[in-house]
Image (cartoon, rainbow, N blue to C red; front, side):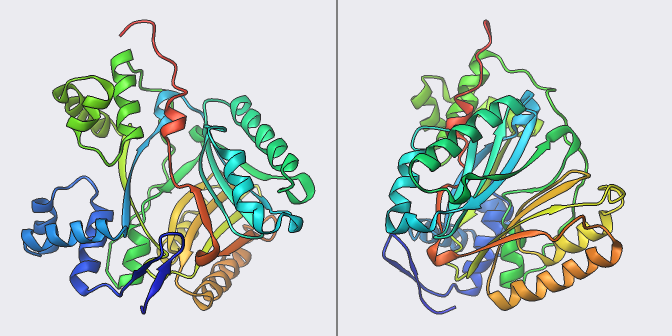
Length: 363
C-alpha cells in the first residue's frame, strides 16, 4: 500500500499487516463484539486483538458512530443531494462551507465535498422539514458564493417505499480490498416506519448514546445524569429492537483508497425493486459500497474505490447490465472525488439530528 499522508493530521500511514487487516475487518463487521468475542470469530489471540485494536484506534484508522434508525420513530424521509461548487469559490471554499454548515441544517447527517462538487445525505420527519433545510442550505451556499448554477439536485426516498441495503457498513469495502470472503447477503425489504415510541427518559438516553458514540455506558450516563444500569439496559433494548446500530467508520484515506463515488440513477417504470433484484445483488457484490438505498423509481449509492481503473471496470459492466435489461430511464449521474482532496464535514453524524426529537409530555 505504501505510505499515505492523512490530510489535516499530518500523520503518515503504513501498510497494514495481515493480522491488522483481519482485526480491522472484524471491528467493522462486528462493531458491538468485545475483544474476546472477536478473537473467537477471527481465530486470533485475545491479547493480539486488543493490542491491534488499540494501535489502530490511536492511529485513527477507524472511528465509531451510533446510528439511530429514525424511521422507526416515524421519520419518513431519507434524501440525497449533490451539486457543483462554484469555480469562483477558489481556496476559500472549505472555510465558507464549514461556516455555512456550522450548527445548522440538523437533518443533514453526511456532507462531503471536493474542489468541484459536494454530496449530502439527510434524514427528516417529513418532506416539509427536509425541503426547509435544503432551501436554507441552498440560500446559504448561494450567499457565500459556493453554489454553481444555484441548484442542488436531490433524490427523495420515502422510507416506507424504499429498500435500504447498506447504511454505512464498510465491511464489504474492506473485504474486497483485503481479499476476505465476507459472504455478503442483501436485504431489499421495506423497513418498518413509526412503530416505536419513546418515553422522555428513553429519548434522553438515545440522544446521549448517539451524541457520544466513543464513550462507555458509564461515561454516557455521567453526561446525561442517568444511572449506568439504565443506560446499559436501554442501549441493549434499542439495539435488539433495531432502533440503534453501532458502526465503525474506517479511515479510507489512511488505507490508500483513491476515489469516492456517488451515483444517482433513475429507472423506467417497469424496473421495480422486485424486477431489479438480481441486478441489485450483482451490483452490490461487485461494488465497494458504504450506502445504498432504492425505491422503484430511483437509487443512490455511495462508495469508495482503490483506483480509477477499478471504477472504470465496475461502471462499464454495471451500466451494460442495466442497459441490456432496459432498466435505465437515463444515464446515471456519477460523481467522483479524489479521497486526498475530499473533506467530509459531517461523517454519518446524527448528534444534531437527535436533538430534534420531540420529548413526550410524560415518560
